[in-house]
Length: 110
Picture (spheres, rainbow, N blue to C red):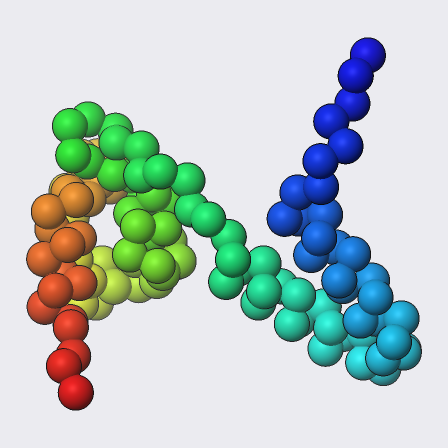
């Protein structure tokens, strides 16, 4: 059985995390964990936006598409502040065009 020895981004992050924790010592390990979690989130490449039907995204993929969490989308739906959505029973879907329009509406030009 052949094993792929090519290191992944996750392997590199884990190695960096261990090295930083070793250098900084005990009390600062929590800080290292937090920094590494932020690093993972920052470099995570979201999977391609997989459509449910046509140009519809489920809540998780819609959140990834606009760079927020699914929890944020839930709060925004309850308060009427987020992008337009489609609800069928308990299922919630977002059109790509609605997400793009919502992002464009919140664009700030300084």
